[in-house]
Amino acid sequence: MEKLNIRPVGLDHIQEIQDLAWKIWPGVFKDILSPEQINYMMEMMYSPHALLNQIGVLGHQFLIFDFDQKPVGYISYEIHYKGLSKTKIHKLYLSEETRGKGLGSRILEEITSLAIQKNDTALVLNVNRNNPAIKFYEKNGFHLDYEEIIDIGKGYIMDDYVMVKQLVNS
Image (cartoon, rainbow, N blue to C red; front, side):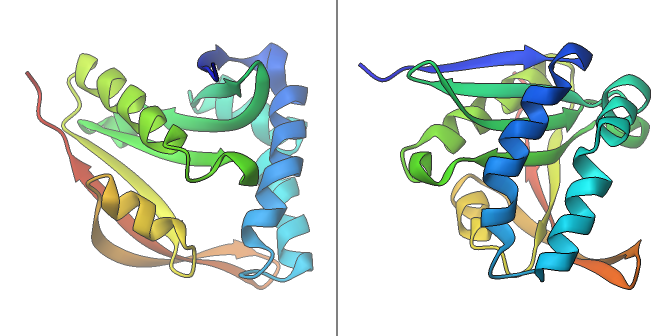
């Protein structure tokens, strides 16, 4: 039987995070961004220095997903984002062959549970406005909060929707 294992990773797993990102991230954005912007953003977000900063300084938590004992995706999130009662999902990516199998929804359930345990009342994330994942997020209870254009340097922007899911604390 196929089994999903979600495991926390940290500074000693930077290479594993990078390897997964290089396998997954460019394919997600190949029809949305130029190859030059993809390379720029991969360096900006997944270089050893960038990951050290995200984990060691900014306090982002990373989880890697293993499906049938093979790494197939990752998420990074931040509890109490900007000191608010919100959990920010910074990254959520699954390998192409595992999309559509319910794994993403199971991972969101896990993050929802973690956020509620920490008394956060909402999940928030940015998604490129041309990313088909918008439908996945809507199906999982997120709604469009506002639109945001972020200048990331070198003439590149991130043209995003900010989506929110309200959580029910029990």
